[in-house]
Length: 442
Image 1 (cartoon, rainbow, N blue to C red):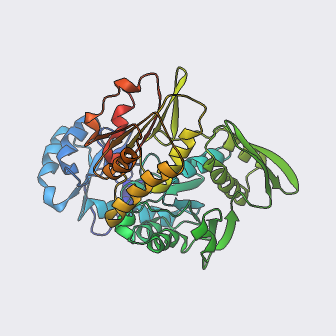
Image 2 (tube, rainbow, N blue to C red; image 1 turned 180 degrees about the vertical axis):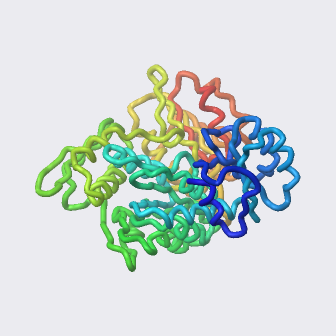
Image 3 (cartoon, one colour; image 1 turned 90 degrees about the horizontal axis):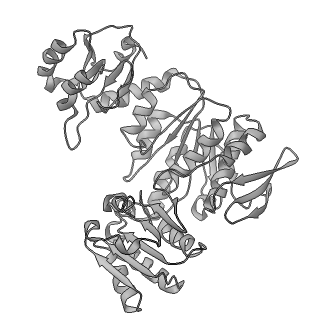
């Protein structure tokens, strides 16, 4: 994008710099490429405080709001060629710029959301698309009102855009959808994640399916009970799931596979994982690839090359034992699914470390109690349970009452990993609990 195109932002002005310079954008002064424009945002700190260090670090320019004009002369004294663009509000400018970019491109834009599994689904779709296409995709956790627009503004003539949209409050999906205007949309599933903010599952459903408005196609996961029943208006609906009449011969296990009937011919689909939910995700990715006119052979190859993202059921082999790092985030559904998976692994000496599921509001006590009751009901008698966090106390009380070998901690720093050496360990919690700190120690 050229600097002069940035000036289409409402009330923006060029304070200094070359109008014809092609630039990219970053919100981190440590993430600098050639011709990087730094957008200072306010969070725990004010990004404007890092502008001068960013200039010394090689940024080519920056946005600045009206309250920080004093920075300009200091920055120019370091580099007189800086591109400096004045705006009313840096975050709103980023979001408006993303909308401007979206209006200038005429390529497929895929947007997905869901209560859980978004990143794994995104990575599965990306693994398929990149076999034939140059893909601009969300990376890491850039799925919110900052990360998604930042992905869009760095569009650089890719063939297709793949975006993950996150939401923990009402209206956020609609806001992001209106910026990226997807041509293809989908919802992975509906669960209790963030139910403290949404109060009821029907509100979560309404929030998630709002992604479909304006999309030419909506992919409906018919393996999900709530999504199966939902009616989508204005989009062509493509159903997918393991019970599709064109899907057969599903084999679960260490290396899963199934057969897919495409244009009258059967193709063998291999998934280099034993995570059962990936079958559903791969069927979705296949449908998208076919919708875009991809060669089925490349789709099959892309599915076989899929790898889980870090800290999302990431399996780490340590000698004869396994560490499963699943502590990027958590919901009731993903926690019990992970426990079931770990229980069925063919390994001995299993230890479970669980932390609180956050953002459940008034439902928190009930949902955490349900986890304890699920463990008892299904006889998940692991060698040890280590539970951390205020609400995991409810799980602790239930397991202790039933004579399980269980330990409780107020915070993650109290946990010693010494007794976890030479054991198989499953780590699961919301990211804010900090279980990720234990991974390197184990």
